[in-house]
Length: 235
Image 1 (spheres, rainbow, N blue to C red):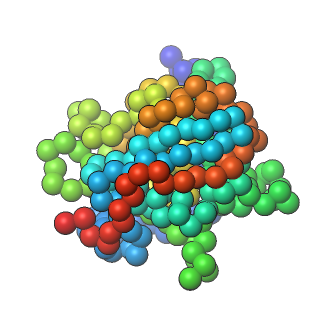
Image 2 (cartoon, helix red, strand yellow):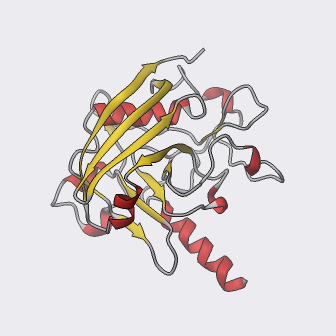
């Protein structure tokens, strides 16, 4: 059991971009959410197509359960932030774990390999990295929680979006408010990540393609196929 716990801890660390940790979160989640950070939120749903070097994958994003996280992803897709990027971290051994990509700097072939996974999306309007908070929505609550790791007794089972096989979620550093552009797809159910990382959608077509992706494969382009209405306030 001790060796398995160590293995799980190592996998958790693999999810975290290795770049600088963002500023610490305020004590209240009220500082975050739609209309507070300049990042648009997704109203309703969106269907996204990833065109990869191994084939096409369709993703369904849930704006009712993860409006800010899903809205950020749709906005980055439309900005072309994922064009030509790499799947820089793929963990399949000793057991399937995740396929991770979305580091904007991986689109530059001159980026050193040891820097892949450390990049954020830099807003051209401000020249600053765009960071979003951890967003978790629990059944029985009126709105998502922001900036709060939620792993108390019984809480994981109340999450509206959980780490099932094919779940789409945001990678981040140790700071829960440091997600930006990097994302991952779960290759199996990963309940150990529930409440720690923000799930905002799932693979609806092409999971067999995801299973074939290897480290270094390319995300050629990403496109919004359907939905994708962005708003500054979901109320």
